[in-house]
Image (cartoon, rainbow, N blue to C red; front, side, top):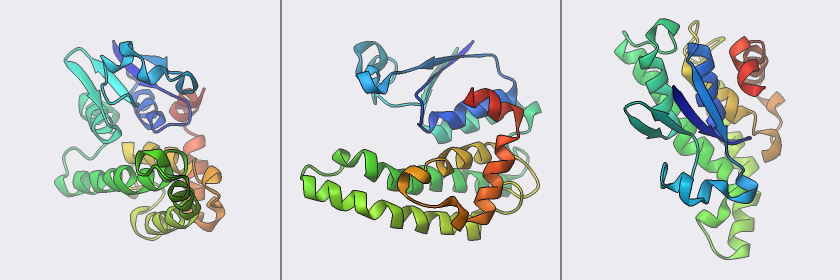
Length: 202
């Protein structure tokens, strides 16, 4: 059985959604970040980065959301969670997922994880003040360029939708009003209607 290590409020929700969408039998292990369980020797032996998500498979351990999402889509092709037979559409999906991981998630992390990039309190505070601006700029790109229709890729649902839903859920804590992005707001409402999303959130 697959085993997903997760934590509330993190990007691991996207992988959990994908597993539910695929109908994959899996065990969810929730780490307590408040008590630094992700830094425990037991977890570091599984994922030396001390972060989530981590997916333990019968072939080995995988980490990083973009990798996990593609793995789930490829392992469970009948679920049609990625355009596996269309090289351009698949690359487009990966482009969106990479943007979410390398740009949007990093912008968000500057508010809560500033110590990763700076030591001075004033530097961290400056980064935190910038977050509403950088998240707004990133979601303008998503609203006007990446969200192609009801779903990220247009008419077809993909693992990119669970990832976008997850990161969009952080906007409120980043002091950004999701109403500024009508298509993203509609996408969030659409996602909340999906049974797999409801199961993952539960």
